[in-house]
Image (cartoon, rainbow, N blue to C red; front, side):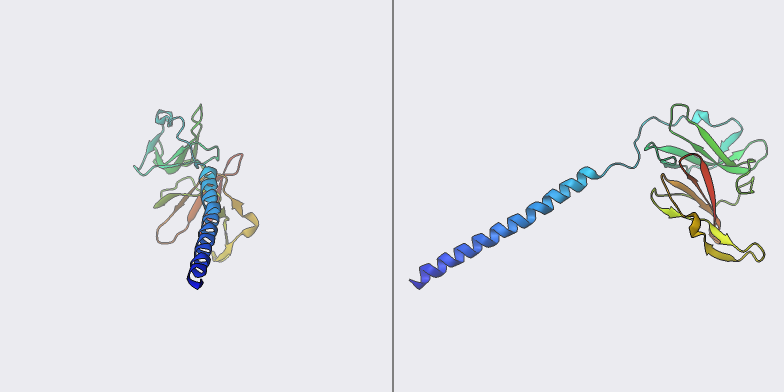
Length: 187
């Protein structure tokens, strides 16, 4: 009598454990499916950027061009370091992936943050959308770095372009604020 009762209790326990295990694993499966559905691509490979739209006065300086959604419209834009053929000054060119392939030039003879020549660029890369950036505060008299100006924190609405000098890490960030491109000086 004890043996059949023990077997019956054992069977009930095992079936109860199996049922709990199945119930626990089902919500995880649903969560995984929800996460996979909610992931959306950061940029769409829509229209191809027409590089013939590069102004005649500019020459691409590197094969290390950048692609990213620089203006937050979910389309892959183009950026490159360029040299102005007329004045030999270096700058950055951004071309939006849009019907008219709108372009923007920083440096290359056009002033940005009191600089017309960005020939110092050694690091040229993108920053991810959503990152919070701020300019560096520098003491005007001594040139000492004070720290980040957190009053000007900005959460990127698209990719930004980070450029700097390798050893000093000084440079800048070009980013779209929803209306136009801005420059933050960084150290």
